[in-house]
Image 1 (tube, helix red, strand yellow):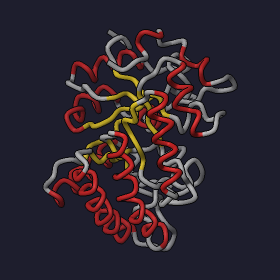
Image 2 (cartoon, one colour):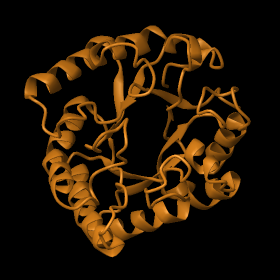
Image 3 (cartoon, one colour):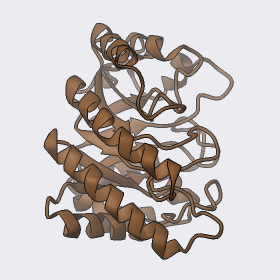
Image 4 (tube, helix red, strand yellow):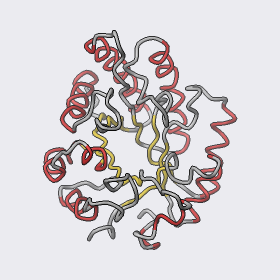
Length: 279
C-alpha cells in the first residue's frame, strides 16, 4: 500500500514556482504527473482578462494535465492573506466578483473542486459579523460550484502559521461545511483535509481520518516539520494515506509541499515515476 494506490496531483502554486505560471503544467508533465491543482493564480485581480484565462487553459491542455483543484480568489496568497470571503468591504466584494469567473474557468477545464479560503479575523470587526458574511458568500460559492457539477472545499489551516485564521482545527472546518450544506440543501460542501496543517495543530490524525473521511472532498500533504516532501520530516504520510484509503477515501491527494533549495523536479524521488500519473 503506502503510496502505490493513490491519485496524486501537484500543486503548481507551491511547486515549480521557479518557472512562469504557463510553463508549470508542462514541467509537471515532464516529471510524470498528469493532474495538477492551483491557488488562484492572479493574486492582484479576481477578474483577469479572458486572454489570461485562455492562456492558462491552453497551457494545461498542451501539457495534457488535468486541473483537479482551484482556489477562489483569496487575497494576497502567498502573502499575508488567508482568503477574502469573510473580510467585510472590498475583499468580500472581490471574492463575489470572482465566484463565477473561477467556476466558469473550472468548468472550461473540467475541474470539479473549488477551494474557498475563509479569511483572517479583522481587528475591530465582530467575529459573528464575519461569520455571517462568510456564510452568505459560501452559499453563493456552493451554488456556483453545483452549477458546474463541482464541490466546494472548506480548509482548516494551522494556528502557528495562520494565527488570525479562525478555522484551525478539523472540527472548526467541518462545522462550516455543515452550516453551508444546511443553508443550500445541496450537500456539495466538503472538507479539505490537509495532513500538514492538522499535524501542525497537534491534532490526532488517525482520529480525524476516522471521523471525517466521509465528508472529505480533497486531501493535501506535506511533511512536518518543514513542510517539505514526504520523508523530510516525521509524519508517517504513507501510513496516513493508507488509513484514508481504508476509510473509503478515493479522491485526489495534492502535493502541496516546498521543494526547498533544489529544483522542484528533483523533489519527487520519494515517489516512483510510474506512480505519478493519475489512474
